[in-house]
Length: 99
Image (cartoon, rainbow, N blue to C red; front, side):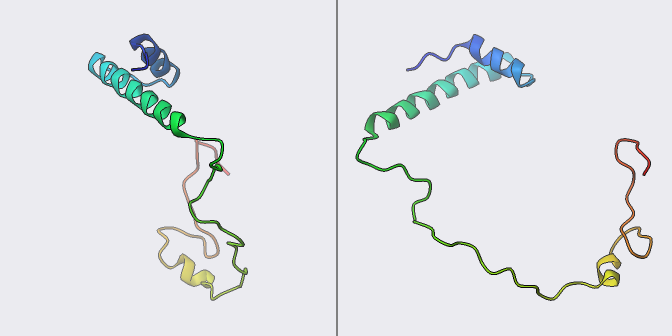
């Protein structure tokens, strides 16, 4: 089994600003070690004659034509809004900044 240490998990948790209990640190240490071991097993069977793939099915020209369709009128779009000024949605200021 690969050696992921408790100290490494505590360090990573600190960098990510994640508060972990001692039990969670123990669990994460064990689980991360298992993940590293499994990745190593996959790396062992990977061969140079197998091409790397990002998708199991080859994709070509996955784009569609950009066709204008039916759209809502301003009145329809604003009909369900809790607050509007007749032409725009009205929302509260963000971060205390008045606009």
